[in-house]
Picture 1 (cartoon, rainbow, N blue to C red):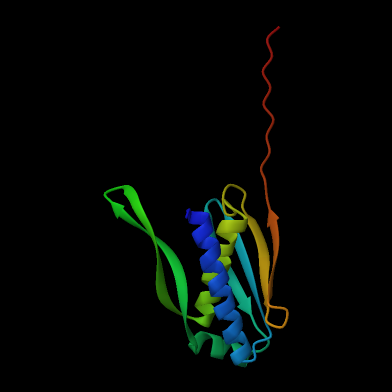
Picture 2 (spheres, one colour; picture 1 turned 45 degrees about the vertical axis):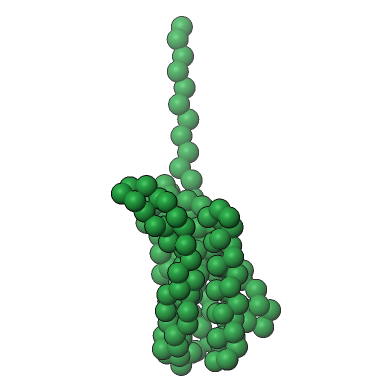
Length: 144
């Protein structure tokens, strides 16, 4: 199984775990805003139903599946799935970054991008609104 297939599998399991916690703690929706530029990208803000919900999301711990390479020197020799313990708030950040890696490779490269990821507990869906920015140039050579 290749990296993308394993990442998809981990994302699906993480998504289901996140939705279960959202249901358990009555979190209807979480909206994550992200921005990337010149190979540096991160989640800037996460908003919930209320300030009380944010406090809960920062306290509740959930297992989160991550992919890691085992290396020998500079060579990658094995890909494995490891379980990390994150708060729900941090798990949402990691989920957004993992989803962007899969759906929008190089999202933070060059002129970058920005967008939002909304997780809706009732519909059990994730909506990604993504805007990519490009720098264009035109070079011509002519000999007369």
